[in-house]
Image 1 (tube, chains in turn red, yellow):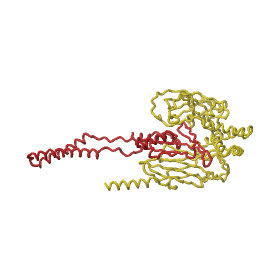
Image 2 (cartoon, chains in turn purple, blue):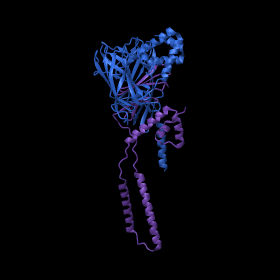
Image 3 (cartoon, rainbow over the protein chains, first blue to last red):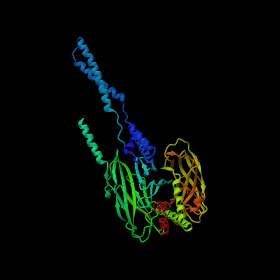
Image 4 (tube, rainbow over the protein chains, first blue to last red):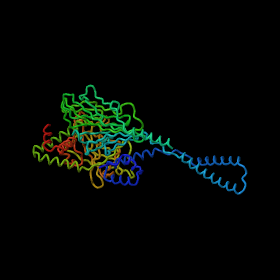
Length: 189
Length: 378
């Protein structure tokens, strides 16, 4: 079975995959627990990071007012240095200027808003005091503050997991290469 | 426009070239064996270990193949290595154990450690992972090692289980021949395949998730083995939907000896009446002192969340406990015998012992005669 790439699974978890690719991934995920676990992992990581990426406080109204005021000041200054308009042609030109000014204002506003739009900060993994142990499709994973330590059990398709209430998780399997039983243990303190 | 494209192109090429970086074995891993260790490190191969980048985080895939030599005059039965990555998970550690070994003096044997670390930022300069010897168990149940993980008790218990299960299969071979052994193996394999599996998520000090179901205190029912030196008296846990918290179980020492470790097996029954092995609840340490005839409490500040199959929550209806291991203050260990487990119908719920798992694997790969030969070695 060919699994979707890790990046496709990550995009799927974030609902960012295109329609066809999404359908393909959905079809695969229906029958592949390993990939479902991967998707779940990406989704939980995404939720965790999203919770930490609060948008910076920004006063949009104040920004717009400042920009409008600057534009008005510029227009007023232009009026001061401009000669008296006369005749129909001038009236038409005056109307054209108004339209151009409005368009300029709109373009300036749009550019300002685009440039000053708040962008989410880069994902950062911060420390947290809680630690969670769980069995994944690949092994045992200890997640603490977004950092993870995983002991993998890739050399067998038959793994027995058991939990210890003191905060441990154990994976036991027969190594297909050596025939030896291998027991991986991860502890949280 | 062109300058932006050029920057993007350069960044892309840089990102691609940085995606997979082979790890320097000398700086990535430190393997510490004491000077008087009964094991000698023959080689440490990091093979395809590499570092890759996922967003702003670094993912390190360590695939270690260690070759160790038994430099002692005794046969080695088990080894436990402590794996620490303090920089990544300050509160976490891991171990890799290989029980059910039979390594003669001077013989080499492999130990594999596959580890993945995910951490933010760049790689540090010191060793990422330290591997220390925690214990070696010999044929005569003597032990070497610092025993930081209580490996001595764990490995002796595995060895006792191995002896118990080998004795069981050898008795079948003796009384019913190869056909009987085949039948017993098929039964064991079927049990292993049919054993209900439960996904457990363990969290210390807080609930795994904020469950919407109201919490209530549920009481344990207990299975009692006639030869158990410790009996469970009563016990409770906080239950909320598919979460169980803070198990506390009172146990009484029925034996004439002081007990320093008790482990309770914890079975949960879902609303459909299906039973699952949920966890083990151990009690040890200086605060746990179980003198002969006295009662003490097994207590853990832990939250467990149960699910199965495709993440389907397992809602807990009932809980059952049984004494699964006892260590006396003189270092002797008690485990349930096979008859007790069969009578309590636990064989279908519990995972097989490491030795039974190894023997069934040997039977599947090499057949009944190879298994009979293997049993004949002990």
